[in-house]
Amino acid sequence: VQLVESGGGSVQAGGSLRLSCEVSGRTPTIYPMGWFRQAPGKVREFVAAITWSGDNTRYADSVKGRFTISRDNAKNTVSLQMNTLKPEDTAVYSCAIPRTNTYTVPLAASGYGYWGQGTQVTVSS
Image (cartoon, rainbow, N blue to C red):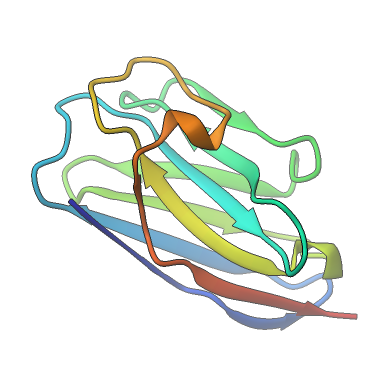
């Protein structure tokens, strides 16, 4: 299984970026997709996740109202629209999926088994 993120970059505070993640390989049949981020010197933290059907999404409190997660199962992709970016959003963002069929939305990194390499997002003040 491979996950490849794209869309990272540098932006000024208040700006927007859209991240995408494409999944390929022998994935589980039913799986949520999640986004996590890790800033330098900090632990990896949950950002957002979405169920297979797309009818349930979860967000970290720090990004609620600013970030929107969506997925396209036909294209095996998940996207993260990030608006009103803040300097504290600066981090490496990674997408992830579980190793087995999963109908819920794990909020912990331990609930995911396949990870992308990450894409850097830098927000300047």
